[in-house]
Image 1 (cartoon, rainbow, N blue to C red):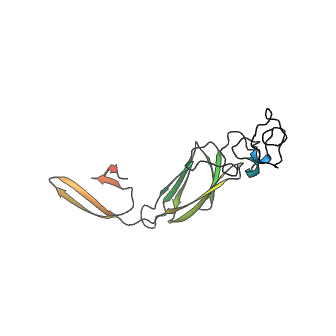
Image 2 (cartoon, helix red, strand yellow):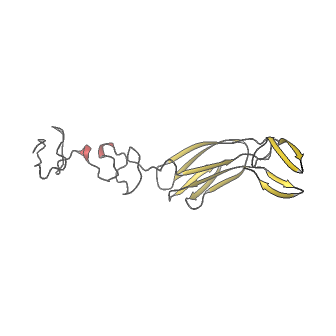
Image 3 (tube, rainbow, N blue to C red):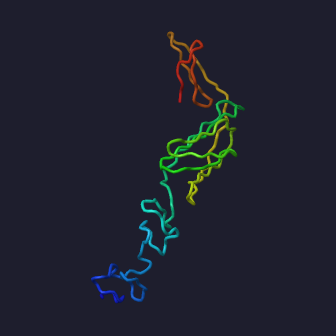
Length: 183
């Protein structure tokens, strides 16, 4: 019994237990056990019985990777149109809930969510995972649209357009027909 914990060396799984620490039958102190095998020792695990394979934080509680959510914001196209958009997608396979501009949404990793016709404003969005005590919050801004201004010139039969101000994307029409869209 090298560490004097009362457990013979051949049965002692934790052969360096500090003197005086209470141990169980395998020679490990309570602080050296990880009963739910989530990688966080019992004495620091605030969420005991985490299912095997669950991603956990330093407290042993459910979490998601930092890149799980992708949030795209499209600002107002023109002044006073209130046509901004917020889209959210996720990679991990869970059911998520969020509220955007007072409307509740449920989505998953196969079907994201889009809130459309939003006025310019800052939106605080918190995403929760159904069945878990998890929440991730973001602040995003739908920016007010601005009037388009620019210059055009024709040289040797070729048109050149320089847009100085406005909200992208721009759809370009030539003789009334859509030619392309900028980004």
